[in-house]
Length: 123
Image (cartoon, rainbow, N blue to C red; front, side, top):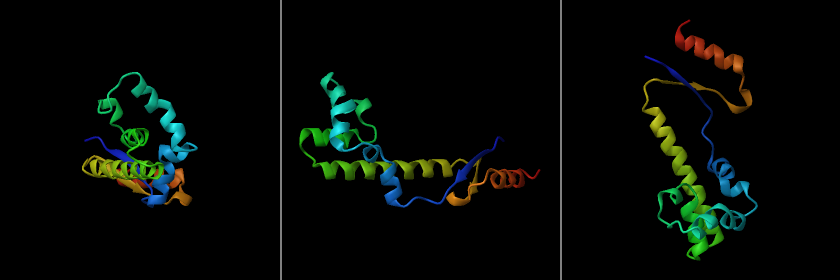
């Protein structure tokens, strides 16, 4: 059986997940809504088309429609991002090939990680 190693950092608090979301990396939601999403809608893509069902699109479309405020759209995107991160972890944890190597962010040291992998492999 092949083994897959993942490095597991401490789970981020919601504020860290929120700060990593695409909405926070932009100046504001107006920039986002005037970009990719608005262009896709202008080209005739339906709001419920598969390409517009990814994280953030629904929130931005609601903002563009006027059915959500800027704050509601930002909150929706943050919540979607959190849910996606949770689903990823749930999916990965079901894979018995995966061996989790725990570490702390400030103490990330490749040599320590390598030692943990070697111990896990019994080499």
